[in-house]
Amino acid sequence: ELAESLLAEMASARVKCSSYTLSILVKMWSKRGQLDMAVDAVYGMMQGRTVLGLTWEEGKMVNAQVGCGLIGACIHNHEEQRALDLFRDMKTWPGFTGPSVDTFNALISGLLRIKMVSEAAAIAEEYCTTDACKSSEHRLDRAVMKRLSGAIYAKRHLRKRLSEPVADVFRRVALPAGSSAQS
Image 1 (cartoon, one colour):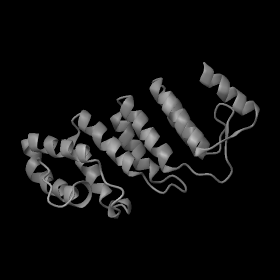
Image 2 (spheres, rainbow, N blue to C red; image 1 turned 120 degrees about the vertical axis):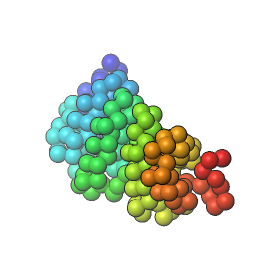
Image 3 (cartoon, one colour; image 1 turned 30 degrees about the vertical axis):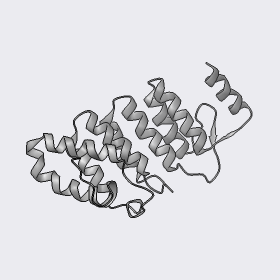
Image 4 (cartoon, rainbow, N blue to C red; image 1 turned 180 degrees about the vertical axis):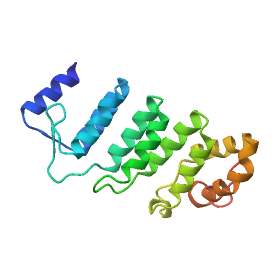
């Protein structure tokens, strides 16, 4: 209720919504189980529509923080397939620089939670194609990658097909040299 009154005040004061404001709204609606509101707000702002009386700052684009929040909202609300669909779509958003490493980590973790191991491995492999992968500052989370490796190892039919690509991901983005994925 307090959030709605604050939003109403912002709208009446003609406050323009920023990516930061939008990411907070996404998180709020996610925690309330109102995922459709979060998705509609992001797409509405991108299309220049007024959302709850709020308008978008002129010339602003949805950033990686909003994208990550939206993926996290889907995972939080157990809508992993929707997260995958939005993940694919966000790469087409105008001015969007691409998903952050946090977005990749959240999506891989969420997919592993519901045993979508092949999809999680594909997302990890996709990360290796990004510019962020080349930076030592932006690594996939070690714990997430260990879970991925363990999930692949536990599924005999996936071991042969996925173990080498995921081992390559480990070598390139997750673990420092000399570390073992199974340790």
